[in-house]
Every structure is written in structure tokens, then in C-alpha cells.
Length: 416
Image 1: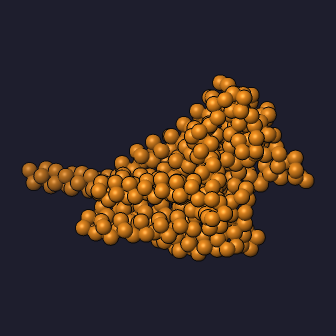
Image 2: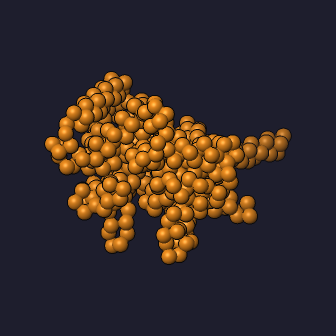
């Protein structure tokens, strides 16, 4: 069995383990977390089978993509960027709403989030731009401006309905610029400008009556409420622990984590799954801790950290700036999103709506995350193939040299 897996699963084996482990955790926990959906469905197994179907399709996509050379991934990213812009504009006019947010688009009966496609395209294109800066230092200003322009075009239509995704994209791009050794002056200027805009936006929304604000920024008040509720939480025990419509997710998430203890109540025994809104999506980590305890929660977090650490090791061995920045950018996207999701579930950050990568329910998120893994594994596969080709070449040269030495030795003996 193991030789068969090694034959077809190319690339880094540790990354394959992380990928498969996350899929297993996702299947096990989703069986429990989708209880409310199963109760409403005519077929009680439908939500679970739906989720497992996406995992299986995603795993197949990761397997197929990891055979694609990364030079084609670079080209496809620019095409994906153009398609993303068109789709994001369509969302503004034809988008479908869920939980008071318009993020979905339905085309030919297929419902998906264009922001997920935009996110992966931005990361790959940014990796390409920064790698060009490394090769053409004199053109850093031009490529830096292009990155800002591309990120701005993508983030502008996403911002009104999905502020947390914009924050994630900006965080990943800034980290990639730092790792890619973009000039400190430009980085500090960019970070300072973003900070000033964020603070000004907060106070503008805070002091502007809702009826006077353009409708496109209506969701900004939801974010301000979440930030204020997180920063200025009630300290009076009489009101702090009262569950209402505004804090229902946070409070039930806390209860779920508190019930988990060290080893949890074991999968299938969660109680909060029946009370926690979006238990299968934004707050799936709270259900994981409730059922698998602190041990299970740490295990899941370690899987993401192993991914980041392993990718860092791979990047240091990469022979081109593009491949190094590509795998780091994709891994950072997964890990930072996981950090946001787990922090929200543990009440360490305001509610964001970011799913836990590869675990939370959501077809687009699962498939795109599988594409991330497929590309990263494809890079490691190609790096290993190149290393093996070099070793074979070196062995051929050594064999040729040994053969020449033997011939010379034979000639010398005959002459004597």
C-alpha cells in the first residue's frame, strides 16, 4: 500500500500527511456539526455527504494539479485575475446574500464565492511580481506600484461585503513583500497609509448616522459593532453572560470550548452544535475543542503550523525566487486564515466570518484550499524531480570519468 502511495503521491510526504489529516478531521467533525442541517433536510445524511463530496473532489483536484509545472500556474494566475475582477463586479449587481452579506454568485446553477478565486490569483501574481523585483532591482518602484494597483482593484469590490477577506489579502501580500525583501521605506509607507485609512474609516463610520451613509457601506456598521463589542465587553456579570441575538455566536462558542476540557466529550457528543449558529462554518473550531478537547484543538493548530514550517524549509531550498514566494504566499494564506478563524472561536478576535481552511463547510473554500495544496505539492514534486535529474547527471559524469580513468590505466599497462 505504501509503495503504491509513494508511486502516485509525488511531492513532500509531510505535506500530504497534513492535507489528509485535515480532510479526516473535517469529515469527522462535520458529521457532528451539521446536525441542525441534517434535522431540516429530507435526507439526514445529505449535508454530510455533500461536504464529503466536496472533500473528495478537492482531493482529486489537488492530486491532478500537483502534476502541473509551476510555470503554467504563473500564466493561469493572470487569467484568473482578469476573471476574478469580472466576477467580483457581477457580485455587486447579481450577488446572492446569506447572513446579511452578499458574497455569492450563481452561474449555471453553480454557487460560489468569487473572492476565493481572486485571493489565490492575487497571491500567485504577487509572487511573480516580487520575484521580478529580485531579478530587476532597478525596476522595484514599477513592480511595487503594479502590486498595489492589482491588490487595490481586487480589494475594492470585496471590501463592502467582506472586510475580513480584504484584511487577509493585505496581510499576506505585506508578509510576502517583507520576505521578498522589498525596500523598508516603501513597506513602512504602505503600512502607515493603511493604518491611517483604517483609523479614519473607523471614526467616520462611528460618527456618521446610518441613514446618512451610502448603502454600499451599510455593512461597515456591523463591523464597527463587532469591534466595539470585542474591545468594550460588558464587565458586569449580570449582563456579561446574558445571551442575546448580538452575542449568541460568541457566548455559545465559549460554552463549547469550556465543555471540551482536556480530552473533550468525543465526536458526536457535542451539545452546543444545536445552539451555536454556523457551528459547521465560522465556529467549527469551537465544536472541535468541545468534542476533542484541548488536545484535539492543539493538534489541529499544529497541523497548520507544520504546514507553514515545512513550506518555509522548502522555500529555503528553492532555486528561484518565484517558487519560494509562491509556496510561502499560499501557505500564509491558509495559516493566517486558520489563525483568524480559531481566534474568533476562542474569543480572541472580533467575529470575522472566515472559515477554517479545509475543515469548515463551504464548497468554494474547500476546493480553492485544495488547489493551494495541489500547487504547493506540485512545486515540491518538481523540485524533487530536478534534484533527482541532477543526481543522475552527476552519476553519469562520474561513471564517464571512471571509464576514462580505466581506459587510461589499461593503455599504460599495455605500453609497459
